[in-house]
Image (cartoon, rainbow, N blue to C red):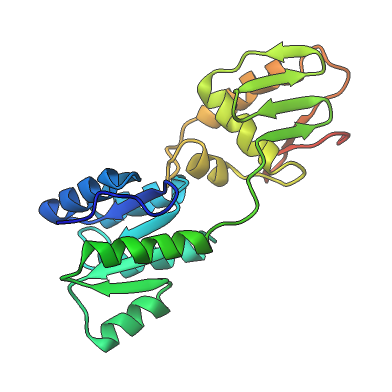
Length: 236
């Protein structure tokens, strides 16, 4: 049995595990000690969720369908995702552990395991991940976006955005002054890891531009021909 008392602040965890019995046990155990735990049942789903989610720690099995655990970790590290990873695997020989750590894992716990030890290791990894608090308000010129209240205003005028428009603007403002490519938008706003060959981005950019720029003295949202889009104050 696992303990039912939390010894650390609430964490948001992603469990990438294809064995349903093991996955259900981990999800239930972490939730009962006060944490939020999501599940991905194969490597492709795990990569997508880990890349698009804000997790404190990932618990990853090595032997997964569609994409193995080490490949998932490697792909995340290549993308610059530094979320701590604990590899939980039946492959527990020294060489296996070395491969896991060299692939980008932060810790390695062989199966079978004690949940108390797993919990302690995850809590240690989560403390490594503590950094400066992420901004909750973005400003470009007189345009302001509040991530917590979902309020958007330009000057004294409040703007009403649809959820996807809000996510699009949030991503653009987070990268203000930088060129944001179509691929970046597809992966981070639409969660597509392929190009669906539609004009969905153009349509949303056009709608967003009409809401944040129309009627104001200078545009903030710019199309960079052949490259992508940029939000910047004062670009002509």
